[in-house]
Length: 65
Ligand SMILES: [Zn+2]
Image (cartoon, rainbow, N blue to C red; front, side, top):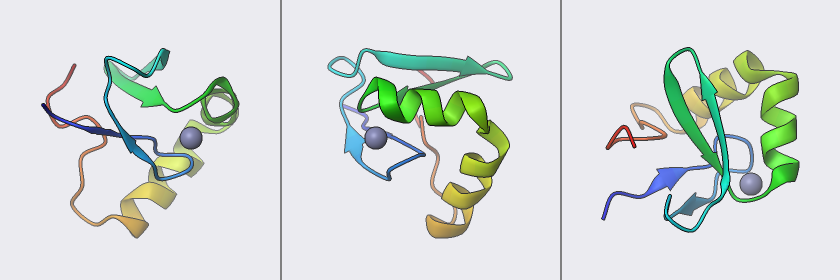
């Protein structure tokens, strides 16, 4: 099972259990809760950049689900 990352709070999780999802630029991002989802929707670029800096080389959705 490929885990996904919540790019807002940094949690890892199972995309089958996380119901909060956003499609952004053709890619799906999963979130642990609607709070994180809302934060991402307000400033997606900010959170993607932050995530990339904190987790070098990590793909938030490696299986592309
Ligand atoms: Zn979260």
